[in-house]
Length: 300
Length: 255
Figure (spheres, one colour):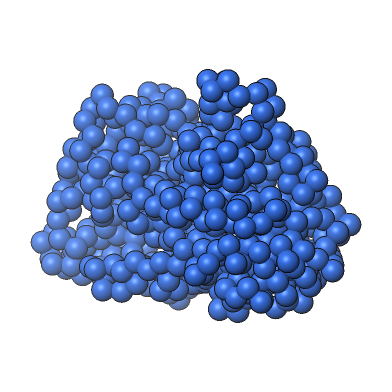
């Protein structure tokens, strides 16, 4: 049975990756998960300099999901390169570095800094709803998506995945803009902007007032958007958004995803990524399918 | 790195000991053996619409019988779900999480306020040396009998229904208590007052903080607090309460 998939010339041993921001750089989860069994680890977003992130509370549970407004706290690229990349290199898995920034130059600086590092893919986070500058500001107009993609591609050595925001009118247009800018792949969805109010305290549940909604509540939205994006572009689509089990991952692939990322589910079950790999294997066996790539976009 | 486990734990006992406060004993394979006072566990809801684990402090550790006592308050739907578990039923649990209290010799205050009281019990059991246990409640008291086995207990209640009317500092002043160190867990205003009291009196002070958490193991950066200095891991002035904490030397964090 063949579980390998290919993203922009990079072969993954299976289509299951972690979703940025939910898995750190893998160190904490490695006590519970064999990272060697994952298709890739996608790291938490890293910027050119350290970011402190937002005030707390940063997370809140909602029915069937959660809101987060971490604000992209990160140690900066220098610490990341010295500590997190060597940690991940101990494992036989692909390394995808998620990059965030406040300006186009920030993204380019990080991409350039990583050019000599043993990193397999870069994922550009132009869709974080929780930071005032950068993040989603780049991801909500087709023009700016194309422009930042073009700029980053001038500096990046590794293939570039553009991570798209669902907080747009037409996801297909954004996917096409990324492709036009030279993106090697697109990933979606980032979180949906949401809000929760604490009725006892009569205040916002998050200090940031709004936060990104993730978890099973967003999954059908994500499947629909992956389907639309996959039909709009030729580059591979990485599907994510509320995948809780192998069924959710397989749905994404049938909708058109070449690989999937699992995020919020990691909080409920540390070992869920490995379980999803096994679940996909079981599904393929039961369905008499020998190659997981046969699932990609099979439902049209 | 401290060892952690994720297990399915059997509920042995689960009873209300004060209004909306429950005492639960669970049998674990290894978590009880690994646990230390001041650490916490994540409890997972069976209802899958409640995705995130609930961080609950460890009240008592019985390593020999592989049991943990968790005393928790019903704060929402998740803890309400736990309160309905019957002996013989089971739940998913991860732990032990966080660092725990440093056990130091010499005279110590063990101070708990409200639902911050439970983790002080195992510390009272394991700590050597003189101690003064000070417990603050709004009204109804709980666990006070359990503490009596491990040292002198002073009580403060906001409504004056038991002990001194007022807060834990009123009890310390009112009873003329002295020690060289503070271990404390409770609401932020109490911890702030104790930090100031310790600073004025040249005492060591360890506080256990809480915050909304998601992963519970240090990956998501949901539960940070402000640090005085740049933290070695985060490389910013934030510490992870679930990992570097929940117990901090009061001077190293701002709250």
